[in-house]
Image 1 (cartoon, rainbow, N blue to C red):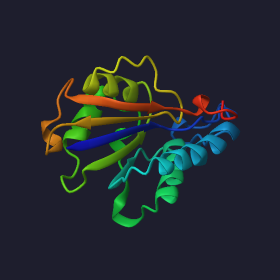
Image 2 (image 1 turned 120 degrees about the horizontal axis):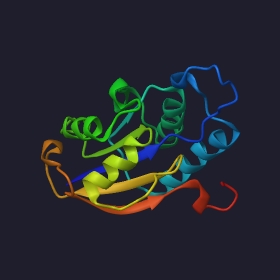
Image 3 (image 1 turned 120 degrees about the vertical axis):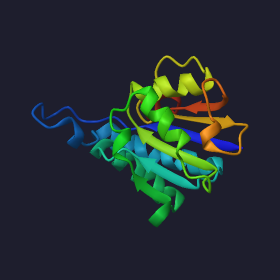
Image 4 (image 1 turned 30 degrees about the horizontal axis):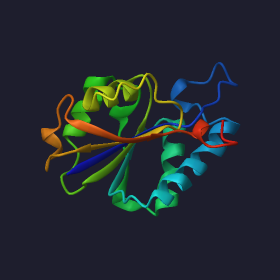
Length: 167
């Protein structure tokens, strides 16, 4: 079995209209939500073999909060430029190419691609993966390359506004 976690980056700042999109940091709410959701995730007790993140500032900052909470360092944390603003097809291809030694992988990235790929892989019917929202999708396969449209099962869906004080 393979397990994929998708986490959209936490809320980002639009304070500097001239800033390049890639460089936008987390805003105050995002800075609060990322470590909070990382703590909530850790408390679930679900192991993660590998974190792969978009290198965009808002995504990598969110991913680092989770990596810190989960104690994932070195070769268990990597950046993948292809995730930045990727469309569904690019993300699905990336999932098919994940390393086989990693059975439980967490990706950090952006909408609309993340919402599109989660619905494509699981038929979850989620209208929007909110900022710092996380889904778990399980696949009854032994190799990432065998994951296709609709082959996953949405196990759970969580996001900051479900928790008092995090909205």
